[in-house]
Length: 512
Image (cartoon, rainbow, N blue to C red; front, side, top):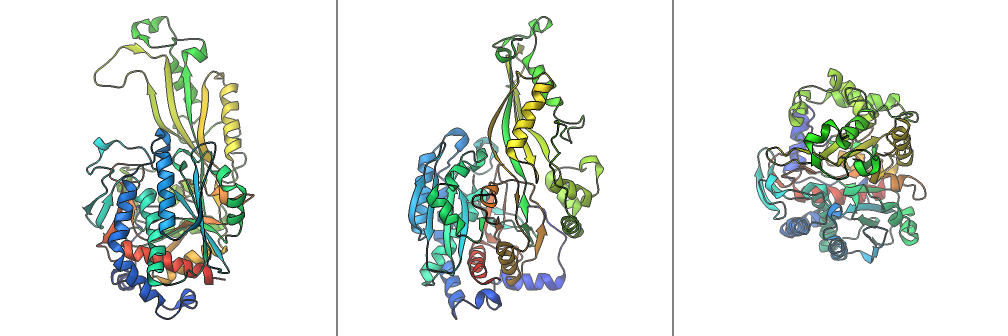
């Protein structure tokens, strides 16, 4: 899990990691180097070092242009900027792909290689409130992060502009060094990930895009999630999600006011807010920890023995106290021990209230009886649940329990993702991490979500995952950051993270 530091590795591992990362990762030997001409890696690293300032500025400039799908802010500009970034990195045939919502951006690099690798980008970011930030969220200032080094702070720094721009930096370094790519690349970017990718499948299955994706051996989203001990997770899947609003209103209900009225009339007028509260209570167990929607878990696939073994192995190396401190909690659900809590994290579907709004929420009191109440929710899904199934069962549950008037407006979502441990993509990731002296822990399922199911499911049907070294944190939160100069010898700064993507390209070309 990002930002959760497993137990410190052995002294020998620390020395090896420091030698590889702190002093510049030694990218020689191994299957990837077998297809790289003598001196190529050295030339690429030299180019990456020379490009360092430009690579940092690329991230800062990108952060300065926020594309926020939820606010319909700068979406056309964001797509155009994405296209320019791709053009500068050497992509050809770049197209803005229309959809029923905001467009995607598509391009390829064809060097005549035997294998093709897909890359997924998102050019949108989450909303932000500047008042909550210690550094302006669009200025992308470089600040000191104790224990990590110098980091860019800004909205999108780690989710996902920092990692994505660092992947582009790898392409720039290879181009500057005059080194031919070992694989062809297909890049597909969207602008609606932060609202649940409601139109991304439409973009990905556009005939020209689909044909290119089906040629790929796999696809990954760049991710720079090293913990303080330098370790990474290789995710064998991710939970799915649906995001929605539940709305109770006097107008739809036929009871209660159509607009706000004085609260003194509560003695004779029904409350849509209480109506919503009662509807929400039917969705979960009294403690809020288990979804009780009818048939919700009928298709849930239990974790396999292998998946449970991977979790048990990972739990042994984790610092539970540090994990709890990082979340600001003192207990897991039901006071579970760490391993069982991690099993639950991977296995259980969830219902979460993101926000709950009705009436007046400003300073002081305002005695109103609101005419409408809104709850923003997300439901995390696990194999073999689907988004369509979840939406249908939620609606049926509300209707069955007498809440047919409560609207459920789904804004987006996608199915869970699974990828085979023996796929070329996962093998290449593991080979790359091993080559770089970075300990990689196989993780059965990321508790977070991304639209990887668009790739793993028909008609695309290719492996999809996450890859990268480096560090950042604070996604969706104030003071989001991405480390560019690491003071931790076990964690990559921007140049070493750039070389990590270079190595992944070579390993993807060579792995069997």
